[in-house]
Length: 186
Image (cartoon, rainbow, N blue to C red; front, side, top):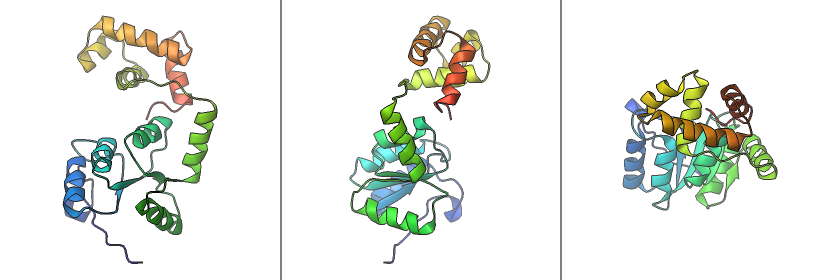
């Protein structure tokens, strides 16, 4: 089976933007779009996935990012499948055919992570809590986090309290350690 391919990006390579991917998908109406999560300027691969999937096109994420947070966000955005770039070519082609038929496809390591998470669910952090946790992991204090995210220090403290509760910790270092252990941070 011959599969026509259109690569989005500068001169057919490089990192294209999410907006460009959405526009090309709208113009070409493909059966399947292969989507990376990290794109150039503008919206990321998850938001591009959300917009493309909303049009009825199947989106198969093909990326090197395998954190629980990335997998969950992509699937929640409507991805038909999630593969890692280390897949063998024949597995990739089988996944594309499967996605074209609307069937879910996960690479073995991703399926294992999803199953493990289903058996022992991780805490669900909001986007803002993940933002704060990311800033926290860089060693920033409340004042610097507040400035970086354009929120008040009181709001940072409120979010930190929620993060501590969800992660079952009582210190900043504990929150960062658990987040890294559970792969909640990119």
